[in-house]
Structures are given as structure tokens and as C-alpha cells.
Length: 166
Image 1 (tube, rainbow, N blue to C red):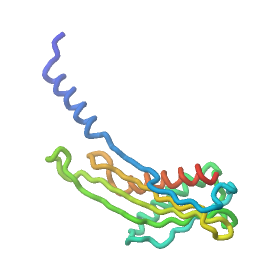
Image 2: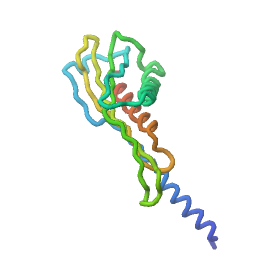
Image 3: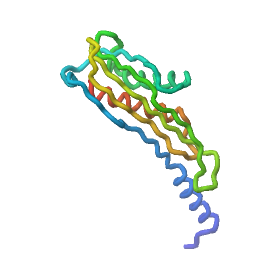
């Protein structure tokens, strides 16, 4: 079977495009500190509060994180909104957007990283848990803006909240 040059070039192009498209979005819980009352109760009500950030955080980032967190926590009745149960206070610790050349010569690809501290309090105001979550998007052509990193951090925050308190 003879493969034409066009087919070879097409195959090389598809493989190269696939390698560039590996998005490498990454999120996770970076650190956890727990209080003595953690695990003594599960909660049905949750109040979410944006605390005082450690950095100057653009309003659109705060809004985006809050919307993504709400969607993941309050949709499907996972928690009810209310101030008589668990309180989640979050604040931004780091926020980085960067540009990088891929393979040393492809310019203007972007990546981003967001680190958020979560603090959980019981109805008496006692600290139950403190966690730090991260959303990171490594640079490539197809995704990599700050919104993607914020969404990844909100996803990790919701996962920790649901896994720990629901």
C-alpha cells in the first residue's frame, strides 16, 4: 500500500496537534488542617462567605469562583443555603497568569494558577477545617486562561467540601 505525501503530512499534523492539545489542567488540595470537632457532624445547610484576600483579586475572578462554587455545591440539593449550619469562608492566596513559548518558538501561549484557602466553621464559630486548593492550567494553544484555572480551583473546593462535610 502506498501512502501519499499528503496523508503522511496529515498524520504528522494530527499527531503534532494532539501533543499540543494536551491541556494539563490540574487541580488539587494542597494542604489540610483540621480542628478537633471535624467529623462529629454532617451538615445540610451551608453559608459561603468571601473573606479578605491575601492579594489584590480582580472582581471578575471573585465572581467567577463564587458562581462555579455555588453551581457545584448547591445544584442538585447537595447543600441548602443557610446560616444555621456550616460556614465556608474562602480567600485568594495567589493568582498568576503567565505567557510561555512552547517548544521554544511558539509564542503567546498562556497558563494560569490560582490558590484559594478554605476555612470551615461550625454553627458556634469553631474552626472545623482549613484547606488550600489549587487550580492550574499549563500553557498550550487551546485553553489556558485565568478563567479555566479559577474553574479548576472551584471544582477542587467543592470536591473537598462535599467529601468532608456531606
